[in-house]
Length: 189
Ligand SMILES: [Cu+2]
Image (tube, rainbow, N blue to C red; front, side):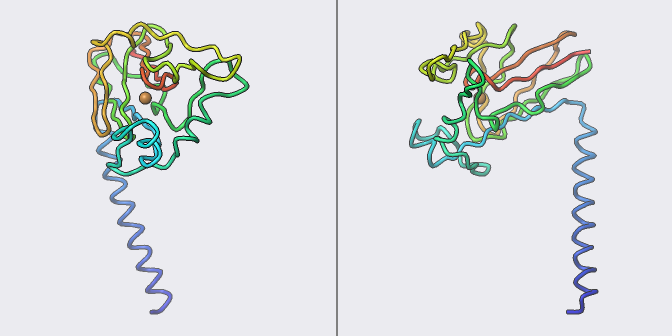
């Protein structure tokens, strides 16, 4: 095939990808909701052996952080508290919304998380992930009271979305009550 034809074919693919990308982008911009992605990178094979079957879903697609890497990044010698693997996070960690605007938090990871409003960030309801039993010098996080109230702790399973509506003006703090380093601040204008 002549080089020009290959080049033209490649350009056509690029242009069509650009058109698809633009449409997706427009759809997101038109939505009035603010989006927060709840993400992790659990590797199903090692997590489900270490913690139990079903801990880490293989759908919509399996991720690839092995359990030992996750454990190895729980602590840092630079900090007294649990740090946690950075692939377990709310993204973005800060959103600014208008009064009345809905916040949509979607679990794009493989594990179950919570998206729980707390008055102050703290620990969750899984002691080892609060730092209990950590290296010498670790100061375990004290659980945030909201994380110990079953009614306030709504789990978000993989693929599910929670809608947070009618937030009052001001600063609202959300955290995962399983992995307490997963945090987001929602600033309502
Ligand atoms: Cu979590």
